Amino acid sequence: MSIELTPLESDRIIEMAWEDRTTFEAIFMQFGLKEQEVINHMRQELKPSSFKRWRARVQGRKTKHAKLRTFMEGRFKCSRQRQITLNKISKR
Image (cartoon, helix red, strand yellow):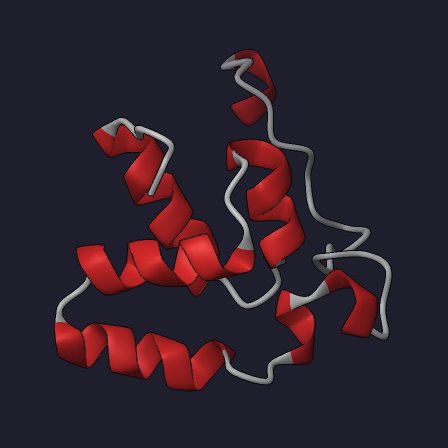
């Protein structure tokens, strides 16, 4: 991998790669890693059994590629769900 990543960035890439609705394009925009580079990173960082499980999960999954998606929004949010803020007063 040509890009040096901090442990925090590496953990975030792994987390994003496991998420169903986070596309490889989103990872590329944030970290500059193409799909094959993400696959190589996952191969290096995960145990062999975890990598095989992840690879089987994302291979052919339409939600991991923006062009193959049939929906525009990445996540469903209920209209009754409260907005989350860091303001302690709003959480009372």
